[in-house]
Image (tube, helix red, strand yellow):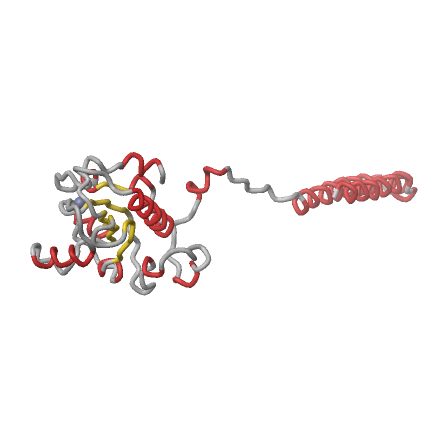
Length: 247
Ligand SMILES: [Zn+2]
């Protein structure tokens, strides 16, 4: 671009010198001479101005590594097939049917407060004792007693994308309606979760955070969920601070 401008300048310069020596304008018509100079001056400005406005490279938008979250547009849930490469190692049953999928806003972590159990056992318990439609959680993570250690079971609440029954008392029932309930089998008022359970929980939460744009500040233990009824869940031995530090 610089060489183009130089050429343009030199062309203009030569036009200037031609004007200066033109006998017709300098001798016979001084007014024409003045007008010519004004015209040449304006043309010069126009050419240079045009160069700047047309050829100036657009400023590059450089984002610092931490700035993405501030500028990212609201997440739109895409059809399942678009996520194939991003989630190739994710079990298929973690992905809800695309026509039913909801925009979830939080995760609520529970313990079962029992030493053993699995999704089927809690489902029966919640039907018979609580008279609910079925198990209240979306996911159950086993401890090696009635399901595998770290095994993640998906319940009908998640498959059908319907409200859960795991965290009562919140305003407009938001935690059951818009929060994802994950239950780890175990009584964490007595012992902590297994390493496999924590590993599976991390993997599941990271997937849910990525898919629904949930910040780590909206990953709650049951007792810390805003508006939730008083409870000890998920137990004082559940390492909530450590979990948060890994998200
Ligand atoms: Zn709970």
